[in-house]
Amino acid sequence: MRILGLSICLLLGGCLTVQVSGEDLGQAGGADLAQSDLAHQGNSTDMANHMSDLASTDLTSAGGTKLFGDGCTLDGDCMSAMCRQFQGGAVHKCTKPCVFVSQTAVAPECPNPPSTGLCTNNAYCKF
Image 1: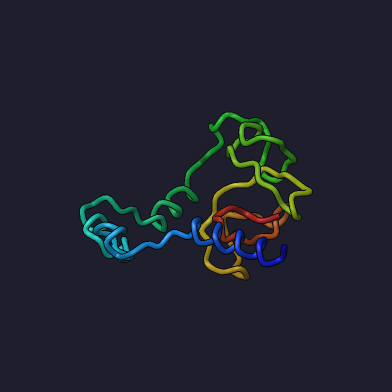
Image 2 (image 1 turned 45 degrees about the vertical axis):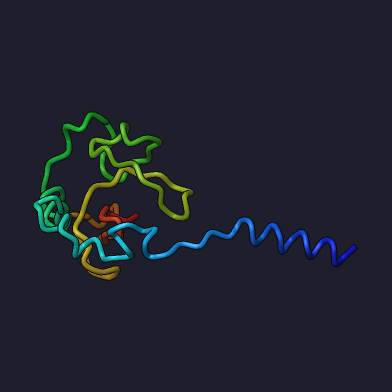
């Protein structure tokens, strides 16, 4: 009975295995798309420039009524339109964009208090 079970497992395992060759990948062939022609046709975006622009943008007209550091449940609750989870998802607070430099660098966009004064690696102020 064990041999029959093992045979069935091997048979199913062999049927479910897919082998992909370089030809199956088409022209991408595992190539680095950042180095492809697409990245050089003006279709790429440097997010570092956009994040610094966003960090200096006044977002008080985004629609919500809650201020930076206030508790929230939805993005629409906050003036910045950024309600995020903190402390392992136990706390939701209104935050705002910042420029991430490192985990220990003080972010001037993030007043301390009420925040920690740091920027998350997702580019918003940390609580």
